[in-house]
Image 1 (cartoon, rainbow, N blue to C red):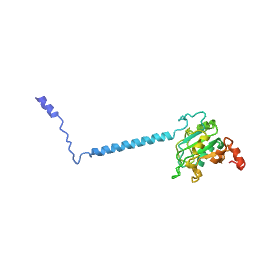
Image 2 (image 1 turned 30 degrees about the vertical axis):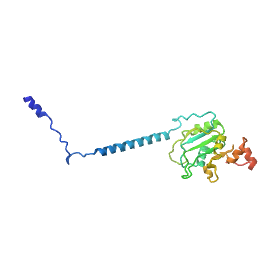
Image 3 (image 1 turned 90 degrees about the vertical axis):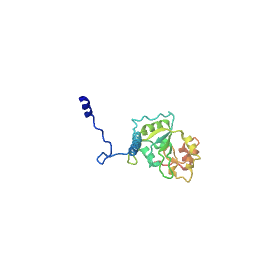
Image 4 (image 1 turned 135 degrees about the vertical axis):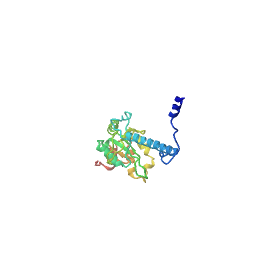
Length: 223
């Protein structure tokens, strides 16, 4: 009986779970659920942002260029900064060693309302080797015109290939209308790198654009 009494005395006293002014602060379960939900949403948003930033800053030596056909001449350039204009982009290409006469077609789609480009452009080169050289130079390249960090260029093969096919795709397009400003329209170039109109390109009928232009307006000086 002595041992039983000792066991009874050693039994811990019940804990008072009732709330009182000196007790720790109490957080309602509804608030906890709200906080967890908010944290989860924030985490997912941050994760997406991090993954996006990681993708945008990938350099050419880390990102293997996508395969393109050996005879492909028309390329698509993605991740063009929205504030870039046609002239700005072409100038940057030339500054990096791309000769103006190596391509005969260039188009940077633009939103007419915001006047910002749509983030991609197309170029058609006269020779497949020139397209390959362009891709090697600019895939993973970070544009520098705006003096701020930008996404790197992603170069891939365009669906529409060759100058004739690109001319045909814009022949009856609304973007070629007279009411559309020239800076929003596709650009065409002769072998010397001088800009020519779509009508001149169509009139060549397989002949040299330069020869046709010389017959129409005589030799011209090219920058």
